Length: 151
Image 1 (cartoon, rainbow, N blue to C red):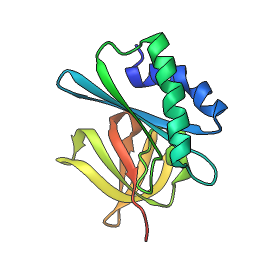
Image 2: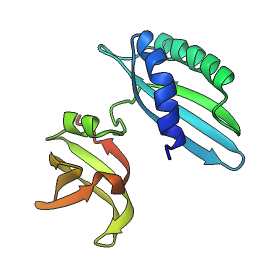
Image 3: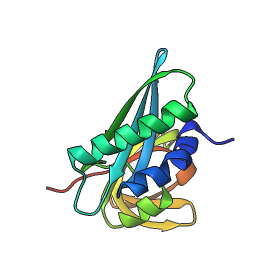
């Protein structure tokens, strides 16, 4: 069964692309009876406030018609930022060689949070270099991942 995020991704992807943006990812977070639906959009040259507003209007109209969310929700649209979250295998592949952080669903070696250089991806396994040691993680065990920006 598909998650709400997957259903929304499928429902909204084409409309976001029609506006000249890439739908980078979707996060749904529940707080009590309310939910926040956060869309991350990206495009060549960067995302503007107008891009976010245009996508927000378009997505709001679609969600009003399709009504895929049973609860009350707030819609947020933003760029992924410098510390962009990583959602898909393809996105991880773009950042091989860079520092990332991962938060695991199931701890490994008594740790849920890991940070290191993304060394390689083989199948659905990611390998990070952490303290000069290789650590491999199944993509399915990664709850959240972000790029660590370099300044």
